[in-house]
Image (cartoon, rainbow, N blue to C red):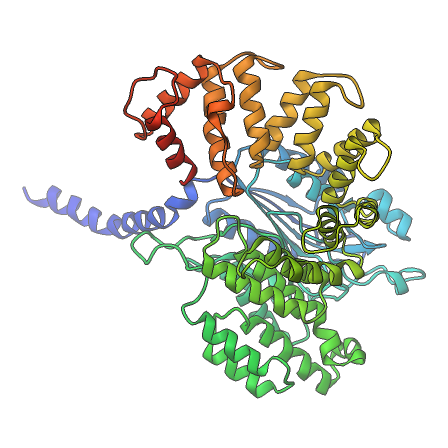
Length: 612
């Protein structure tokens, strides 16, 4: 009897141990996740008065559970009215103010497009025509604006809202089909259950084919966003007999996994497969062929390759063409015409993923090849990116003549960023003949199209009276418009005009705010100027510690831009100079006395900062 209590305790531990072990495994797997804020808003609308949908509530529930297990703080709205949805979107925005957070918005239910804009249909509204939609429905753009105003590093939008459209009377028959494609802002991916303008299945089981596949793939350890959506697409194609092809538009600049690999499991997923070069060569050999068997062999050989997704899309459409499935209406221009958007856009998105600021040389080289692949299909954005690669020497030797040729091709297709870039070449005679009148024409076209770079370059001409009558008020107006779009060069130049009172009243505090925004976006000149303001106390309280910190940041930013800063002639106060040396010492780069004299040891430490 005296051994009974210890035995019971041991028995209880044996029962609990597996649970504890499992918890420890989950915590270990999610430890990188717990280090960053993850916030999701999940909406499922299905109990409409008419045109009820069976699965959105189930889909939203599944997605909420999946995201919670991946470390997200999940907000849910089930069968929401317009007010419910708007309040939730507002609360969502409030929770996204943590710098570096990851945001995810998921919607399942009815959605329609009006003149290219997408609307999410709430419950409790009477929809008879398009004016009812614009008045009572919730525009997707409101979600996009909320995310854009946040401080997130990554935004994910998932729309399982392309289901059978109930609004088929009158004008709707011709004007509303599925959802319209939306261009993703920087750092954003927008995922659709099916292609633009197409309809997706609600599903005969408890979940739609798309959400069921997506939820399953999200929890694959180490899978990147690309991996998740690529695998989801394959599952949906298989399950729907190639009738539904999920779609994404991405402007991502960083990697993300819902469930990162544990530290002891090989670390982070590589950006490129080891056999990427071999896959590129294999794809070049078959990309122009309409042979499903060859495409299947490519997928079998490179199951996780960069082009396996494109091969799957081509197979689906080839089979649709032969079997007269709902894809057939897209085939009237031939298989190459129907693939142009799907294949070129998917290839372009992959290139953007690789073309990050601090990308390795191998990644940049592969990005260039992918841009070329998409450009061959005539995608204007890809034509521009090929030109930019030659212009900046990213992934290919710098060649400004070749850059101008590609920019011109994209400009002829009215691609505004290419117009602005080609204008700069004509303005300075680099890669194109010096022609200020042509530069001015191209800048105006780009600015009229809403391109921030075009606005900024045109504003500079007005501010200097270069090729046009000097007009500081117009320059300031253009800078303001470009700054509102997040252009750091416009913010910097506008700050200088604002501080000097050119084109409007002087305002040192407003100038400091603009410089702060530009510095946060990595603009070296703005970072230096902000350091000067704190050094001298202009527009901000004098603060040599902050001034020193901005000097060191400027050193790094300038080096990334291929420039250097001459600190000897910069005129910093001795207080700022001493704090620069103190901060260098704190980082282990300087061992001397903080005397404020920029000696050889200080300069050597600054060089080390620049090269980090």
